Image: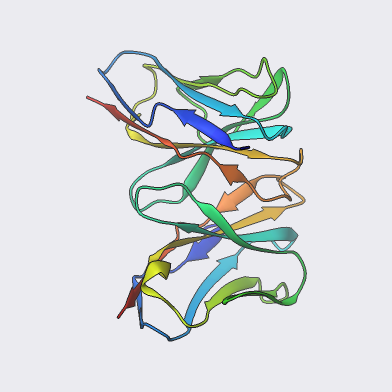
Length: 114
Length: 111
């Protein structure tokens, strides 16, 4: 059963701690994306990767880091430098390296930092 | 001007009516257009994609694209309470090769 798996579903951290959100896909998709969604807001792009071992900053990359060592995996680290980390984080993938194909989303990770 | 604009709503329609959701975009060279449905607390799921001017129908859903006027709309016929959700419009362009989302329109279908 193909899909995108994000874990954990809920994550709680203290301010000042780094935290890594997992995203794994078995769809054999080339491109993977990380979005952030705040209440009442649209999705904002954090980072994306179109190919293994390569990734680009999105619109709000400050305070975040990623890696793409395997095609299936695209973990996101929220660092202590991120000023407002509490949000709903969505990982997505696409079969195309361009943005012209629909994105498939994981179920999201809700991060709360206190 | 926002790149992709949607009325936040809520748009309230009675069960069985047609719900009309609208989206405008600023980049004239936009090429791909998507509608996603997002239930509260859940991730977005793709409803429709449209790439050329005109209408595209899929079941109760019809997407309409007018590139000259830079708008894309989603019609939901025979609306059901289960259609109550936030509908996100997303647009890509040749220039940025990124998918830009609107803030979404919340639809409420009441019995």
